[in-house]
Image 1: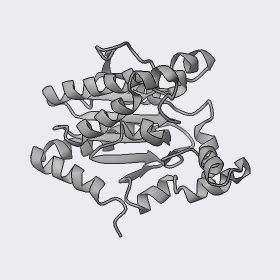
Image 2: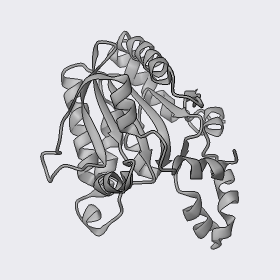
Image 3: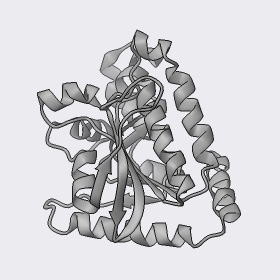
Length: 257
């Protein structure tokens, strides 16, 4: 598929969402709500669970599957209280020494007036800062769209993985075409120039792993859960200072030639 064909594919209604991954990979998931400042944002689902028996904190951006759930989840576009809810769960994970696993699938953070008034940019910035120094392992998996700050607010991690047809970019191809060329017909060229596919980002060193998407689910969740467990256990064994040093250097080296 071309880059723009992948963009259209991840926006399809039949694609797996965060809820599917949480339900099929983890056990004993207990959802926790609210940011203790304003309210609960249904675009982000967060809670505690077990991965292969190991206690973990799980956070996912959820788009929904049908009209009703998409409206409830605001089409996966989180408000600031959603990012603050996520950060609250991360800080609890740090307190109880639980690793954090994030599933990312959003066209971007919600840009409505209310969200801006309640500090959308500040909420995202706080997540970036706090995740960089969180003293437990973090694993983020891009399962669909990874749009701008709304995505990276849950993707400052020791390892960032992508499903092979997922996309990850600073802006949507449509937005890029409108800004650079003032021409929406340039959207396919924009998608190519943005280097937003998993293959491109692996080559650029932005992500660590590409997860193959099988034609049939079969043992897909089981295999993904296995490699997640191996990665988390490996990072849990590292001294905290080394874990944080590696995370810092991972992001500092992006873009170096």
